[in-house]
Image (tube, rainbow, N blue to C red; front, side, top):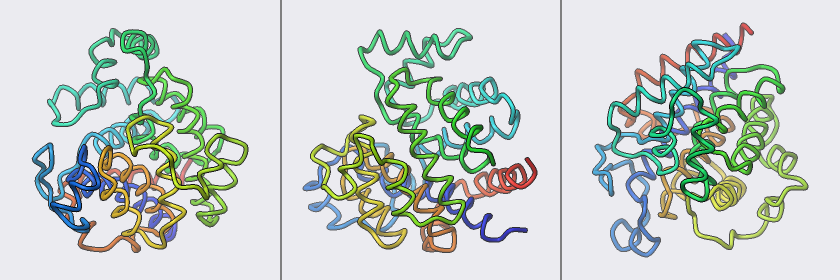
Length: 293
């Protein structure tokens, strides 16, 4: 077994879950409200707007698992399988589901791209972060950059018609791909955002709220990753932003998990996650595909 690769894959998947579970406590809160109630949140305690159990994850992690499971079922053309896992999860009546994704699910009649377009027209926008929060398994599972790009774009367009969503998902998974090759975090980020509208946020503090708008989310994710020095700082910084803290935590946590590895995630965080068995099963299958394709 390639222990370093397994550590990175496991770190990425657990990074999503830990960022989600920690940030779920503070979602929709302001920084001031968080400070008044928790000081600076550092532990996975649940609660929050969704009344989470400590270690319970939200849509970010569950939809990430749907994408992973769809790829595992049909690596060549995973869209049908991913969509089926999406709908099975939706029918389980989850506590937390984004408005854009909910609308797409309600409009779906056999064609994901059509449902995404209808939802975009109905709502007047579809620039949310819901396809970014779940796209990491694509980079973890596939070997070739062309396959990663293709499936990353496809899974984004299934629910998010706005082209900025697929664009950011591609940048994100290209960063993940570089990290999996052993490149440094700062080098990987700078290489993939060069020439884009996000380049200035390598240094500048984001001049926007940490909201669910894809542009705002990615600015904050980049800022957090480039201004922290270990995994716990990444997810704690995200959680204490409030607003869309669970999703920003999941997205930043995924890349941080690859870079710092599962061994770099504090044990009390990883052990707190309630769906550890499901995560571990999926991680072991992703590793098999990654090393056999």
